[in-house]
Each structure stands twice: as C-alpha cells, then as structure tokens.
Image (cartoon, rainbow, N blue to C red; front, top):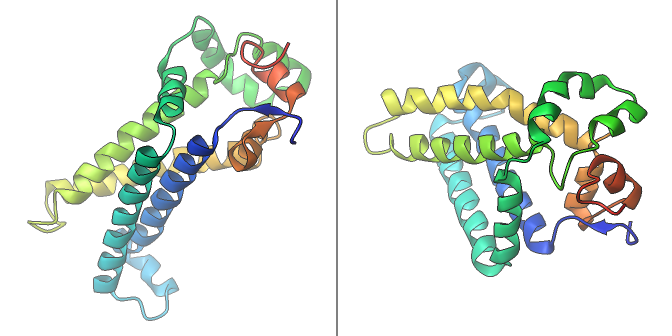
Length: 208
C-alpha cells in the first residue's frame, strides 16, 4: 500500500484512534451501568467500580483527543474538517441513491460515485452526527455528577447512548466489512489507499 495515495496524515489517524478508542471504552464501561442485565456477564461486577471506570474512560477520551490536537498538525485537521462540512452539488443526489449504493455492483457503485470528492455525503453526515452526539454525551454525562444520574440529565445521557448505537454499528460495518468502503480502514491504519480505489470512488479527489 506504500504506492497508494495519502488519505490521512499521522495526526488525523492519531486523532481518529484516540477519539474512537475512548468512545468505545466509554460505551463498554457505560452500558452495564445503564442496562443492569449486562452485569451478570461480568464476574464480580461492582456498580461503584463501574462508575469509576466509566469516569476514568471519559477522562482518557477527553485528554487523549485534546492531546493529539495540541501536539499534532492542527492545520491538516482543520482542512479535513472543512472537507467534511462543505456541501457539494453531488451530495444530494448521492444521498438519494445511497440505499441502492449499498447493494449495487462494483460497476454501478463506481457510476454512482462519479461526482464524489474526498468524502462522500454519507461520510460527511456521519462526521457531523458523531461530533454533535459526542458533545451532547459529554455534556449530559458531566452535568449529572453533582446531583446524581437519576434526573433529566441522566435520562438524556442514557437515551443518547441508545440513539448512537446503530450508527456506530453501521460505521464499523462499512469500515471493516463492506467491500467498497473497507479500504478506508486501511487508510486509517497506514494513511494510504489504493490509487484505483481512490480514482473510482472519489474521482474528484483521487488520481484521474
């Protein structure tokens, strides 16, 4: 893959994995607190220890993410964020074709991707959705601590957690399993994707 196209810099990859690992650790430590039935799967589970572990995961998540931003290439991150939040003429049509895109043949999928730049509309929506819901989870997770987790803030935190589970599962499926998009996972591991894949699925960004 060393001859491929550079898609993500070291800073972008470090930021992604710092954010994602902390996020998944928070889910893993928080779900048993939210769903008591899950505690039976964990030998010797203690809600008090579970709460402290969840808090530690939250601190790790925030510190690791901010640490990468503080030490890394913020200009590159800002450029990528701009790419993620800029609407393009082809985004609307791509979204309307998305259900068919999931089950299309390789040839048809390439045709559907003919107007896609560095990121398709689905990736842009996922990015904005993740940033917004993660921010809300952070706020609703921190706010209940002085008063306990049984009030309105705690309820909002639990419902938000349920709300993000399916999109997270979809993101993992597309990144690791779906044949057309799992190349992105390779890009998040070593920074590069294949030239042919980039030219086919991101023609307005990849090599022609």
